Image (cartoon, rainbow, N blue to C red):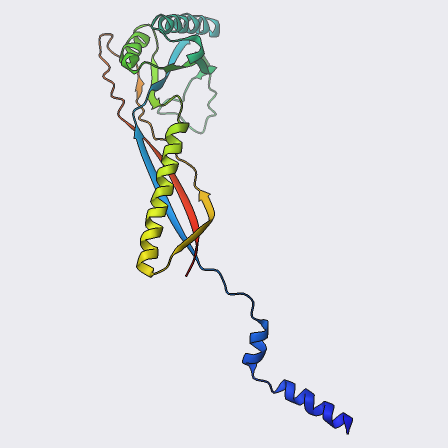
Length: 244
């Protein structure tokens, strides 16, 4: 008799509706989240510029090419200092001595091995200068080229202390995300709760204008320079918990 009762109880348990078993397994309701991206753009004029001045010298002898190159670069450095550029704003950014090899003629017979020969040597010395007075950029370029700089890269404009501008862009990005989140919340009939997550994308440093020139140039050529404005950009992703 007891065995029959136990069998009936097990059968009754197996016949319970599936919804009853699912209800026992349900946990707390899932939290509703709103995620919104914001972008901040801040524009500001640059307060500094960097230029890279190169001196390239060639000679049949490496020592002669080096001596000529060193003399020309010394003149350039002295001229920059005379223009008010401090030693802390001058840095050698590249130096090389390379052989100049002969090249096969146009009608070269490829069935015969070509053996290049050293025709001479090329010495290259690059100097990066930071200019803090933007009104002097054009004049400094003129002087540098006149005294022997035959390769110029720049100017690249920037700011000496970008952090305040980057922080301002971050604030604008956060305000942009909040503005859009409130707009969507009102349209959806919900209320924003506390912020649960903030993720910042990399704050992009501003793109700079760059001019590259290969010399020679006319000694009396004026170099007009326009610094324009720089744009600092920050992006942020913010998540809110919804109240209702």
